[in-house]
Amino acid sequence: MRKYEGMFIFVPNLEEEKRNATLDRIKGIIETDGEIDTVDEWGLRKLAYEINDLGEGYYVLINFTTTPEVKDELDRVVKISDSVMRHMIVRDEK
Image (cartoon, rainbow, N blue to C red; front, side, top):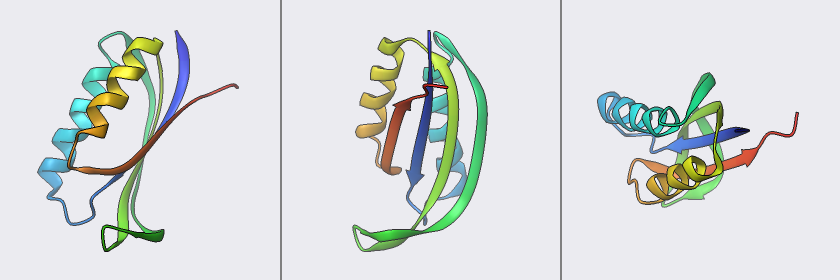
């Protein structure tokens, strides 16, 4: 088991229900073989540059512990999700 930090930027004009459903799906994937340490919702923030003509995004930071296989599956699922504009999952070396 390794510690990871995941930053997910959701589409800003997404309905709260859809955003929460996608976030629950992300949490569910992590909890299949791991545990979530913290979920920090930053809310709407201005992007450094426009992505698909959007200047804002809804940021969520998740710290979690899981296996590399689950991290790879999470990465795969988030890549094909229309709700998430960008994401990054890095190993936490602390």
